[in-house]
Length: 99
Image 1 (cartoon, one colour):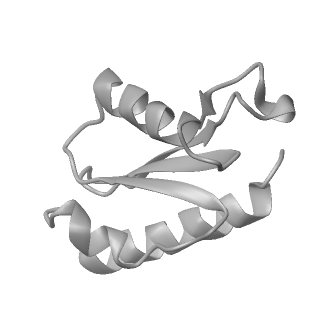
Image 2 (image 1 turned 90 degrees about the vertical axis):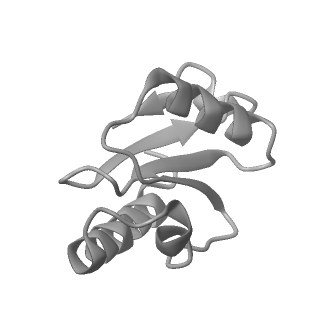
């Protein structure tokens, strides 16, 4: 999987932030802990992710110059995340997201 190592590291960091802070904060507090120049990271702090959140994240990614992104939700009891793929890049043309 392309960029598996860097997205895995970010997800690991997100899990640590979630263990430390838990749910209940605004997205800004979680976002401050995650910065990268290769992967877009869309942060949510919702009880549950909805289709509009997936669509918003994919739209942000596809208007960027990044090949991959992450949608991370800190608001649920357990951390939720999806890897998002920018279809403008040849290796990503047949997929837009996965767990």
